[in-house]
Length: 435
Image 1 (tube, rainbow, N blue to C red):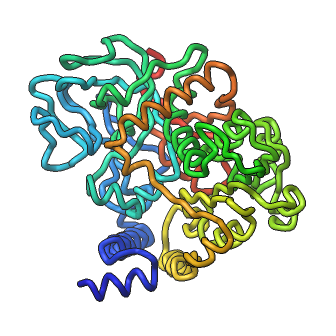
Image 2: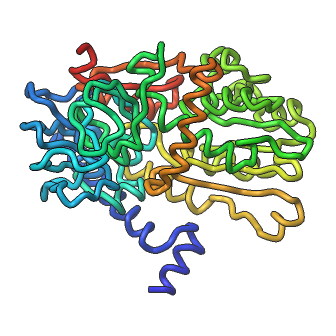
């Protein structure tokens, strides 16, 4: 097994278990694609609702046809994150994301009636079967989703929130729902003046952006080094738009935003970017060099194979490349046909390797992370939200581009975020949004 794992690491940079999970996802998606092609399964952009509170499940890896609305028939049935481990929480044998609460919420937890939840690109990779934490901690069927906003419905003993409170929060899967059980330390009061949709759009993208800044050594205080230039890939997206605003708030300059389409330029300028590079019209790296001739103290890259190597080269001495996604490794179509998987595998084999000797000689750093593994980092999450909410309250951080969809039209939101053409955040509103 160790030799197999070594071979997998040598070829793909990932161990044998992760590669095995990816091969399983390939098989499931190819089968799903074939069944849709043969009209055995029919994908739809609208989910059929049966009237009761519901949760959206991904039954198995595949396209939109793997979505299903699962009724939550009684008040004691809720969705839960993988870090909810209280003994009185009885997970249903048919789905690890669903649980029964015969004794009500356990100590320090609350049931939230969700009014809105956000759609992140990570949710698409969960549907495709490519999100490792979802496989490791939950499995399929799974209720995806991290961000939620709603009203506290019931609380357990010692809860730090009260019934009737309007809250925003994060759950480690389970937010694609109308009723969820959440540990109270993952819930916060919705900031004044913020709509329920804006609140639901906030947690994951802002937390990801702030952790990226922390890894780059730019927060909680700027480093002593002279360079303050930052470059943000996918700057009009959820995380990118947060990074641009946060970089401005902490004093970085210049802030160079990169977009892939002309209709996204104005949005980045409005966020406070010093320069915006539209790579559909100009050479990205020539423009990046012109904007910061001395290189960058930090580059934030969720693109993957298309830009990682050149991002590293564009760093200044003491600069850090922060990696938090691999969008260009993945297709933009809703269905992953066999050719799309071949292209993705080729992309994995082409991923750059960073030489430790070069890291030392050039005084550069490379960091990466995935917040979905951070369920135990309660102090860190709390500290991040203190800062995020402070920025929201003083106007440094805003969510001006939020597109909403009815919960029943969740597949349309997935289609939009996969396309790469969306700006800002996508949020689904449940039937309780107007309550």
